[in-house]
Length: 222
Image 1 (cartoon, helix red, strand yellow):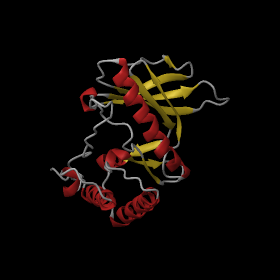
Image 2 (cartoon, one colour):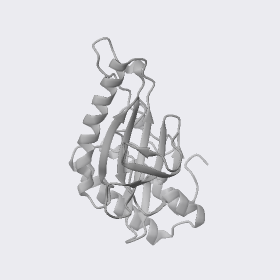
Image 3 (spheres, one colour):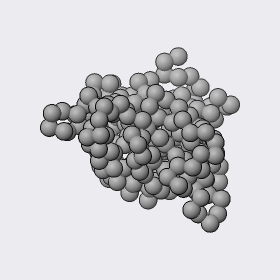
């Protein structure tokens, strides 16, 4: 964990920690190489890799995955990936800072009415249509991954599946990653996704469940 004031990669100064999971930590940071007071989001992933060879394989995979989804930043409702790098046995992704709350935070204050829910669905479908046309699946559409930009009230989809839990045991004797795709949040995942199968419709199913949550304020598991 990095404390406020820590500088990563001689460039990104940590402002505060935003969240933490088993293998991922998210920070709000300042990019010291810009001429303005530019904020950004730094995501740090730790990996259970027993040796340097395994770490190199994992890192190469992540570089390819991030390169694949980096082009999605051309869409105004997908945060731009600004930088990514490996340091030690951590992988870092730096993305655009979005000034706004996620859907879960919004609904905890006030449920959406019908018009707001329709707007959410339309916004979400526009984003999914764009990424699906580039042959990319999100795999984890859920309330905490939909932000509302304060500037124009547009919904922003974050946390694409490139950065995820990878363990050294998934590397076979040929030095290849044998990945089992995570199902995302089981409360919002489509039935086929829980069985390890992924389709474009799986993302749409998750968006529909997210819309029901926005309208009712109730988690699918409540």
